[in-house]
Amino acid sequence: MLKVNHLSKRYTSGSQVYPVLRDVSLDVEKGEFVAVMGPSGSGKTTLLNCVSCFIPYEEGEILLAGRDISALEESGLAEVRNRQMGFVFQDFMLLDGLSVFENICLPQIIARCPVVQMEEKARHICRLFGIEKIMEKYPAEISGGEKQRTAVARALMNQPYVILADEPTGNLDSKSCKAVIDAFLQAKREMGATIFMVTHDSFAASFCDRVIVLKDGAVFKELKRTGSRREFMDELLDTIRQLGGDTDDNE
Image (cartoon, rainbow, N blue to C red; front, side, top):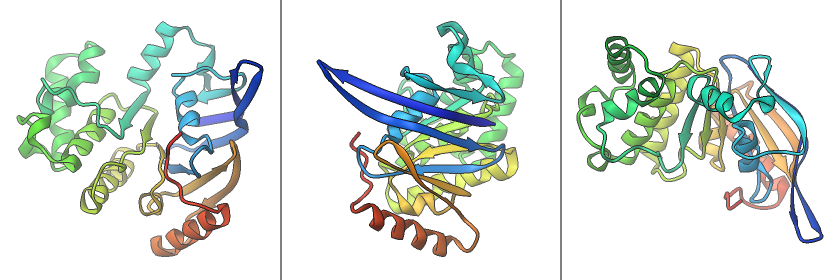
């Protein structure tokens, strides 16, 4: 579903060149829940921004459902981002002046979908994620976990090929974090969603099918969950210790 081939990204300051991504290649299959982890400065946020084509890169290609999206003009990219990608951000990115229901409908409003079909789908997704009781509330009136579940619901409205999640649990307490991860797992299970998540949170990553660990802009290790979630979390923590530091994301 998502394929990254030999991706390289550099920043230049005067005569100095700073490589951020070094020949990164990875695949995310349809219906997979994949996380990217790594220490601060490892390039994980830059990788996500390149995948979404929000920033340019010097070498490599990014394929979404077999299509090279890096070759698209800005108008084509805008359509891909609205219809084929869903986004979940650490800071929710909900519009304060719109209700929960209206925020969820937004991708289909932009796509000019039929109103009856749009509203029926939004209500179905609200029921699916257990937020039907807050549909008429506004972002300022709901909790952080409810805001993030609303963001996940919004990301699914156009049935995108992939959901790109940038530190979706970074601002949440443990209870809200689990609620958001449960929403991702439910989207994967019931809607066949494909999720590509950048996180520093080993707990959140332990629910994934695979975790790709970056170090100094390159793939350091790829871990696949084969046993229990607890065993996978221990494996992730061991890998973090090998890297020599925490994974707080200050890139």
